[in-house]
Amino acid sequence: MGSREPMNRLRFQPGWAIFLGKAFASFLLLMIVELISLPVFGVFYNVPWVDSFFPLLLIMVLATWGITIAGSAFSAVTVNVRLRELMLPVLLYPLLIPLLTAAMEMTTALMNGESLGGANSGGLRILTAFDAIFTALAVYLIEYILVL
Amino acid sequence: MREKLILTLGSLGTVLMLWVIYTVFLGLPAEILQGDIYRIIFIHVPAAITAYCLYGVAVIASVGFLIKRNFVMDSLAVSCVEVAQVFTLVNLVTGSIWGRIIWGIWWTWDLRLTSQLMCFLLYLGYLLLRPAVSDPTQRGVMSAILAIFAAADIPLVVMAIRLKNVRTQHPQPVLETGGLDPSFVAPFVVSMVALMLIGTALVLIRLHQESSRREIDSLRRELHAV
Image 1 (cartoon, rainbow over the protein chains, first blue to last red):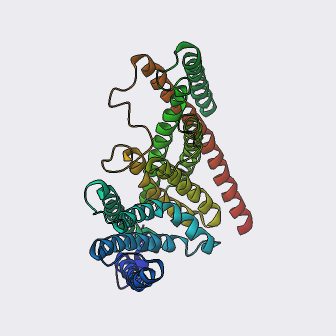
Image 2: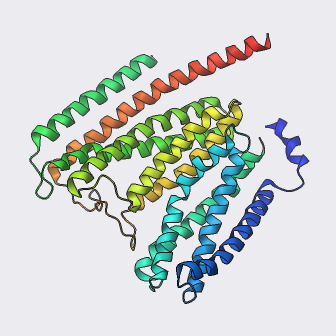
Image 3: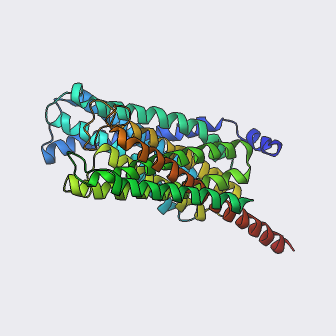
């Protein structure tokens, strides 16, 4: 335990601050890409996104944050591993399945003109729970990964 | 001492499982709505419950490793995950067979089946990550973190059929709603106990193998140092 203290003093910022900074940067980048893609999809595929823009934005923000936080956490885990380009998707995609499925179901419902409440609220709860749980886990556990 | 324990647990589990198989196939009549295929529940659900218990032990061992850096905890975690993977696979395959008979399809992407498959794939990633890291401490820490992340899926699997406003095809819970006929309860509980005993015996065998591996690794390092 004592031998790890000098390493912590070499860093000027706490580990979780660096990690969250990286996650926010990736989040912003992904959001910009998504916000540009939305009108493009609207034009090419006739997706009626204008009417339900704000619920759609909510789903986009929640799902993007989930992808970003899980992706940043796993990229920190796999950065020093052999075959790192292979390990990251192998580990990340199963984790993202409920997130992506819930987001897709809800955007389908929105595109069909339904609202997000009532029968569709289960997906919203899954997204929120996923984000909350994985943000908490990632921020708490990142110290152990970054010390290596 | 260890061999005796493994032998006792294993044979007790096997004997109980044989009793369950005898009762389930010869003692119980066919069910009203499902016919004969319902008998698969006596393996399908206990295998899942055993798997989750083992994943839980793996998570506790992982947390213990992160705190104490004791490699026995790391070995316990990987042993539990490996055995739990087998039981999860049993759960998925028996469920698939049941689904083929009842629904006419081998698989559907509803929440419970998808999240259980996801649990299997996540821990498969755990088992794939371990050989890719050569340093034991690094391997232990990364596996521990992965095990904790993957365990966040297990509440989702359990709650999937109990959530409101989530459409699932998987049958609703029967244990807490009293949907299980009294004559089914004994084979069900005994099957659970039997599979847990067999699971424990397998974990102990794997733990023994892990301690031999650690001994070999330390001898190899000593040899390289010399």
